[in-house]
Image (tube, rainbow, N blue to C red; front, side, top):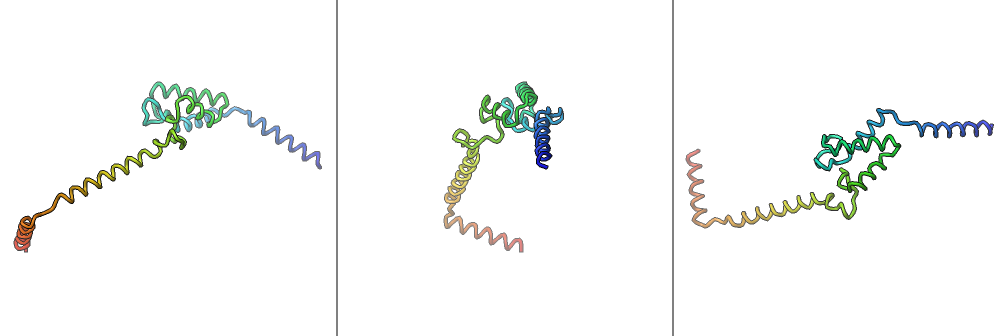
Length: 151
């Protein structure tokens, strides 16, 4: 019984090793290439992924991804290669570290600054619109006339 169990385990290990070395199908490589390219920013366009861009650099980067996939590299290894070569800016989701703090929190800081400036402008305008007694009496007279004419 033990011999049969050992034989089954050896067979499963060999099958797993053989499966791991089987090259991926062209459709699987294409799917992985598209997924990786969608996560990387085009350095020419900057608001498109390299999957969407038709820039020459984007085509070259897609070709590099394809070659590395055919060489058997993992998705993480390819992203690490692109990051090492072009910096964290190439990633749509850069890691949070000292060099990318501005990328992560800069938009929120600008939004907060804009809200503070808008609040200050509104507060300044409200305080500068003080009516004199003559202006108030004139407004009351006009409003009183408007009610009489409309009634």
